[in-house]
Image 1 (cartoon, rainbow, N blue to C red):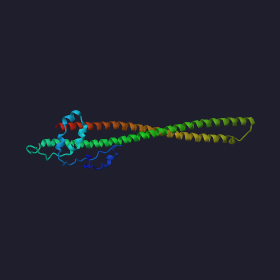
Image 2 (image 1 turned 90 degrees about the vertical axis):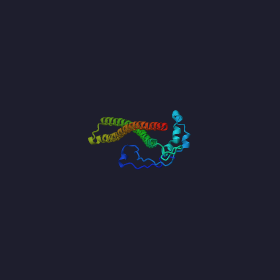
Image 3 (image 1 turned 90 degrees about the horizontal axis):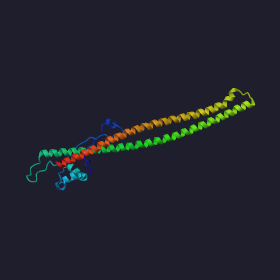
Image 4 (image 1 turned 45 degrees about the vertical axis):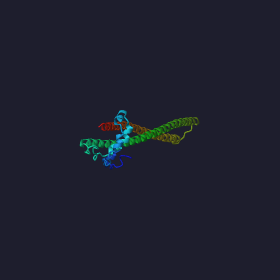
Length: 248
């Protein structure tokens, strides 16, 4: 069974939740009571020297819960029935408490690593979505620019035709009447330019947002590397402690 089922956890303080995006608050910790005596028959079957020599972590995991949460306080010498050496009992007790706390820290770091990996996946998905939107907006702007060039060319051609016609027939129209077609075409051109400028602004904003997401992603990746190093250090420290405890 899980060695943490009887441990007490308390909700973090209100300020701890805002410590950082994707972080898992370190839970309150309380040591378990120990009532079950050691299983000497089971322990006598373990070749500690061989486990240490071969680095058999699976064997340590098999006996980890029992060794960490058993109580040797009431054990007596099978020969003289005398109590165990108090210093040895204190050493065993301290080793058990250290191991229990390291297990608790490992559980916390594993949960934090999972949370950061999930945040990283979400940031990557958001970056991809922003990249797609930026590509789409760029294509729209390109199409609008092409349309604007086509419209300008058409307007220029119509202006030349109107000027040629006016010259050939030598008609004296009112100046306001002549300016009406040009005003209409200028209005169309103005609206097209306004739409193009608006799309360009949206592209610029998407670029800024993409750059911000990229910076956050790089920061989160760096934090992940640091936390992963901590997890590795904790595991190595725990294994080294277990080896020293077994040697004792």
